[in-house]
Image (cartoon, rainbow, N blue to C red; front, side, top):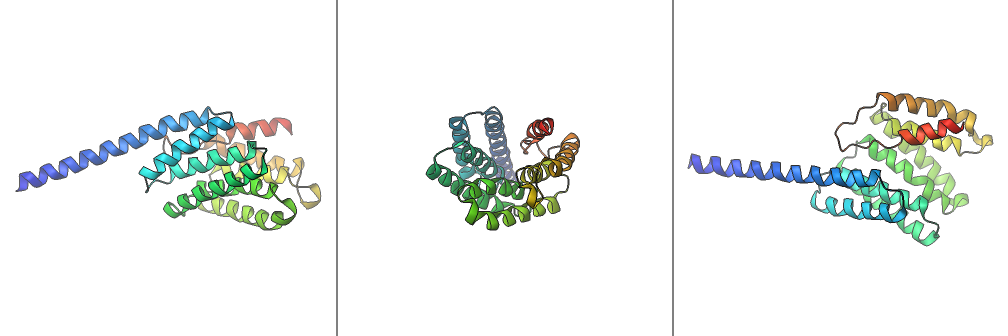
Length: 210
């Protein structure tokens, strides 16, 4: 009886380890493709891939995170207003699912802030007052949960850069935030090989323009 139980437990452990290895391999391939994506069609493929992974890995937040990230980038690239709105809605669905799994994950709150500018662009006059406040709260939450997350500071800098000077924005105000983001990126170490790493190149590009 003990031998049978041992065999069952060993089989279960092997199955679990194999499933985890398959997940990590699938994610690694998908993340690499995402990192090399440039066109809307490629980001769409990435979003679909991560969504499929998320359906099989319901306790992992990263597939939904990357599906949302891919979709947000699509929303910024898309020129058609109706399609852009659909991408924003889809991205929010992915973010909501990720937050259900990991509500205290700084990266997800930063990603939420990344989505809001695209939402605002659809109707700046009406959405601006509401979503700018939500964006700031998301960034504050992201920094509170992990003060070392460089993406939070990069997104803060971008927000200030694109804000009118009369409201405290502009290049002069944004530069210190970009510099802080750059400092954070220099010492940032991803938690796992699958953890988000985007933003460093964008930060350096923006600083070179200021």
